[in-house]
Length: 189
Image 1 (cartoon, rainbow, N blue to C red):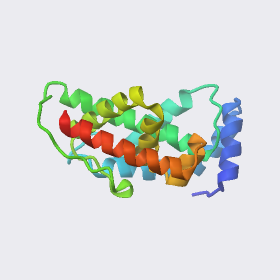
Image 2: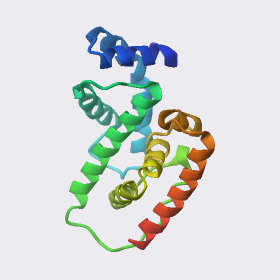
Image 3: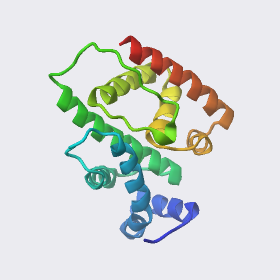
């Protein structure tokens, strides 16, 4: 597997966004390892017998990403943030379809503290988190984006700050407030 630095990946992303198909061909092997790592992280806590495997999740996300045209990729972190969002949507859509006739009022507790260790194990929890995150996005889009990048994208505080063009202190403040709000919203619902 090839390796490349963030600057090379950023250059290839920008060239791809500008319409260079050769850049996409060079980029694909450079980012595939990270995309698979993200998919494994997402799938780690899924229920046994889940029909979607990490490779299929990467493939589905990749197909959606390749179809995006005219994107002005800022950098590597921006690309992986969008990739994380795609994977989240794929898994949430699958969970929603499985839970369509199983919605209930049971409260549960979801821990957002261990970003690197997160594995959402139940479809209902993923749907509840997604619903709460959509509500948060209506109230405070920046805090919702911080949760999405850190929790779903696995980005560090520094990477999140770079993507959102904020200070790491602002990211930490938003992260703490958003986590508390989501915990309250999820346990209340």
